[in-house]
Amino acid sequence: MGDHIVSLDANVQARNLFISHLLEDLQALDYLVQNKLLEKGIIRIGAEQEFCLINDHGRPTNQASEILEQIQDSHFTTELAKYNLEINLDPILFEGDCFEKMESQLKQLIQKAKDVSFKFGDRILLTGILPTISIDELSLSYMTENPRYFALNELMKKARGGNFRMNFTGVDELSIIHDSVMFEACNTSFQMHLQIDPDDFEASYNWAQAISGPVLAVAGNSPILMGKELWNETRIALFQQSIDTRKMSKAQTTKQARVSFGNSWVRGNIVDFFKRELSSFRILLTKEIEQNSMEEIKKGNIPKLKALNLQNGTIYRWNRPCYGVLHGKPHLRIENRYIPAGPTTVDEIANFAFWAGLMQGRPKEYDDLTSLMEFEEAKSNFIRAARYGNETCMSWMGKRVPANQLILEVFIPIAEEGLKKMGISPKSISNYLAIIKGRIQKQTGSQWMIKNYRILKKEHKVDDALLALTQLIYNNQQEEKPIHDWPDVNDLHEFETKANKVGHIMTTTLITADSEDSARLTLEFMQWNNIHHLPVVDNRERLVGLITYRHLQKYWDQIQNPSSQLQAKDIMVKEVIYTHPSNTIHHAIEQLKQHNIGCLPVVHNTHLVGIITLKDLENFQSA
Image (tube, rainbow, N blue to C red; front, side, top):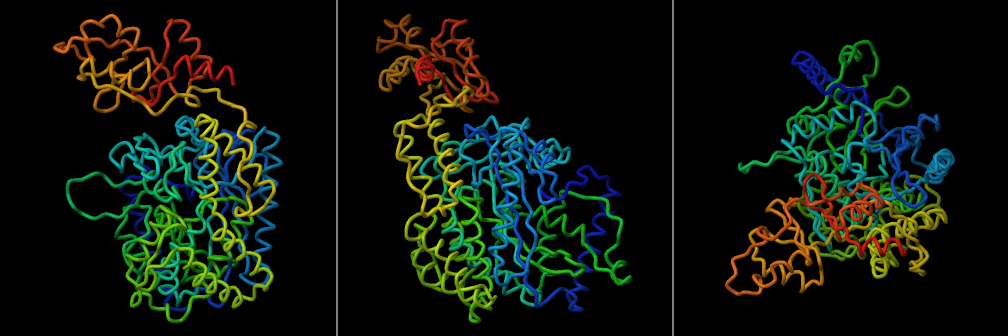
């Protein structure tokens, strides 16, 4: 989530001062570009590893800050949620055995996190979206206790004009209204940084955009959110919607989301790019800045461009240009933000080698993509990859090509040439690109996850299937085998339930009635679906009553009469006893016993989200 020392409630004077620094930064960057002071001829790579903290059952925990304090290593930092941390790897030269070095450092730091986490009873998991995250872990109680995060949440809501509305459609559908930015915490990524030649900015950035679809297609690892099978890489839609600050409007004005692939090819240099960004996105954050960038240049110093970097950090392009200073020298790099975490470290480094090889292997004929390919084709490829993975077709240079064929016949050879150009050893090239080929020939992370989740759901409730899936991911990660070699689940009964909250065992596929429905129709609903409890909701899915089969018998004769005018609102129980998904199962059992009732509707923020019955509890207790 970027810089921690920022201001969200700056007065007019402080805001104007920040804007002044922002404009000075642009002027300073232009000076660096025009005077050829940005580093050239040297290419480095770097990465950021986000990961999840889970308990031994596979559910998210809330001890990230305590674990971070014990780790005592500057490579680690907090994330938005208490069940996530981030590792920042050291930048290294793109040459020789750089990927082996990066893989080695990543494994060492992850092992360090594992050792400390184990003392707290936690485990480390690499995955794009943790399958066991529920609505309970998306409450503000799981937000990292940093005032900036809470203030930023309020700022985002204010900019949005209220709650966040999200809708995802895949094999399943998930529509939800949420009161915070915490859905963003579901996203866990492996962000890759590649230094570029400043004179080649336009061609490099446009090429990065063009290759995004095929690269994402073979790297997908996040098809499941809250038990729903959605996009092949659900993070793409989730991240955009979870922090979308655009307000709903009747006007047909086009305003870019802060999470965006973009709307056109880039033209010009990096200064032109940032000028367009500043024109398109309002300033959300400010900070006090002591040094004036142009004055630093006059003194012979290299400016950090803190205002510009802060503003750039609030615009989440999937390929984000970045300015930085390393060893006193300024440079440009592209940050690839669309690759998910996991399934293993070797998979992640293979993704990096594939992408970086593609970037460096760009054939000369692709230097001016604007004359060869419509931008909409590149964007469409990216969206199709996010939705359907490597099972889709893509548009490439005017032809429709299956994604797997495009990757095998066009992209892998380009990546191989790029890696050779950078002096990467033949063995290293072969090993990492073999992993990419293996996913095409066998399975990607998303394909493995979908297949095994479907197998588990056949004999388990959704929550138990998600727990089992998470435990499978964890167990396979310990073997350090790439995803294409992961076996399928072979014992459906080896995972015992670890449910302890209502949300873990409640039924979420609901049959409901409207208060205006005829009483006879409600009876038919119950008989057709073999249920004994029928919640009654209003047009906003808020619980307004409950009809039980036992209660219905009081009106039996009237209901059976074809001329009856009885409606659901006439026969429903209006004072409904209900529970919350975060309540314990033990508490729900006590409620049922105390009130001698057979079911409890489950309500979250006044909305009906599930139902729990005596049968559910009997099945749970006998498990």
